[in-house]
Image 1 (cartoon, rainbow, N blue to C red):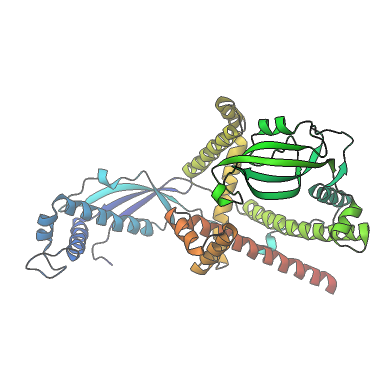
Image 2: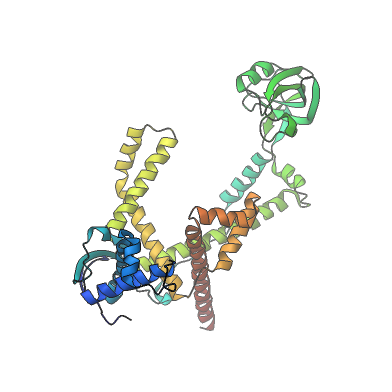
Length: 442
């Protein structure tokens, strides 16, 4: 602790926005400069002096202007955090603070102002006050029908086509052989090809021209490029052809419930298929309901204990959201001006969403502090392993990439939110169990 304390006057400029008027006595300025020069001397070899023992004047003479620059940085790195601590502020960031624009004289008092945005003060209510109503999770008839229909579409069956030649409504069940410079390569049997679903590596127009009107038993030849991922790695980057023999023409249709049950090996037939659909849908509904209740609990807390945020931070988040939405629309094919107009019309909604995201962000971290939830190195390492497993990469490579790109903090934030949501879910489950127990006792 310095024997030359600074003086701080604190004023509020707006929600979570503060101005600190700081006075640093000349003795403290000299003290900080001396500390900085002694630190600089430890990294220098100066003839006649042991490391770190050279007088400040000698270090200053050796380093020139760089010495003053290092001393100035050292000064502000120490006094600004001290001023914030004296004001009792939990800082988020400094606002447009440029210490290089402040004149510092080593033999005079230093006065300057700094604006600080602080984290919001969040007063969590008792969990007993957070009311969340449960919703049914039983599988509905509509969900069951949709699930079975979707499963049928994902596992189509193929009936013989009435048409005798390949057209836009039919598919061709084919055998094929790839050929390059007269050499036969990989082969495939029973491949389903359609005019709107050409063979990989073939140009769509060339494929359609070669295959349209093909009949069962016909043989057609289609030019192809052997692209990345082709089975013969030594052929990649070259061209050849696919020799296709049409077995039959078919029309796809969704598999029936009976066919699905047979495919899945369900002895009970359609009834067993329905029971399996009910089981899976109920599990999905229960998981979705848990997440809904967690969201509802977080929203209830925000409603019970609202808090302010720095206006500038909210504005920046809203602007970023609008810019991202414009970019999304443009990438989807919308004209730039039209995209900007659509975003302008949706501006109020985008701002509300931005404010809600920020409030949720700070609430998550406040709950984490209250419940003593942290993200440790082990959590990050586990996440790197999971990411690596999904992408076929070594965990060390993933960690290096995330750290190099500065994505590790974002990942830590995502892990923290996951852990907080899990904790909130457990709290809600305990509360629900307690309520059921009390009701049973009555």
